[in-house]
Length: 254
Image (cartoon, rainbow, N blue to C red; front, side, top):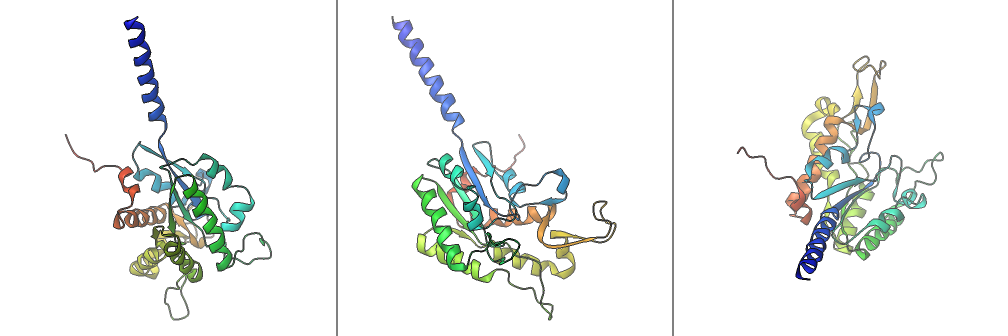
């Protein structure tokens, strides 16, 4: 009888251990094309969420749900948010970065536009529903574009939406990583010429894919995506957010 009890106890503890191992912390990335995944056909274009995933150890897993062309509004309208809410559990993290497409009041894509006021309303929904499931939320201001004015000065991108994110952080008492300011400062420091390497900007015949050249001042090369991901990680460390506990430990020789 004691052997039978011992067997069932051992089976119970083993099952519990395996189950707990399967319940990893999940880090959800929610946003637009500057964050999302790209396949090999789009090389060397990357969203910053791609290299960002490499910063974390095996106690966490990254789910990148960011999608090109989406705004706070269209991400909801297309039912991309509800499946995430349904999957959230206590201890998960949600990183949200929108703004590029919210501000695009285009007749070709009327479903994208959200005024700064509506943007705050939709972001409030993301915040409240994440919290209701016990997940920690981190807001991220929209990353900068590489655009200069007639005086050769780098333009501050999406100011109204960046301001809205900062206000939301205060109103809801949630952490904000000001990626817009960080990336703006990086581009400014690198200068007009070298900062081209951050973006999908290529001279004619520089890449086989773009024989006539390419000039995209919004989306990132693999180098640019990594630099933006490093800025997000820097923001996490500066604020000592709980997410830092899942970052890979420094390599040491044995």
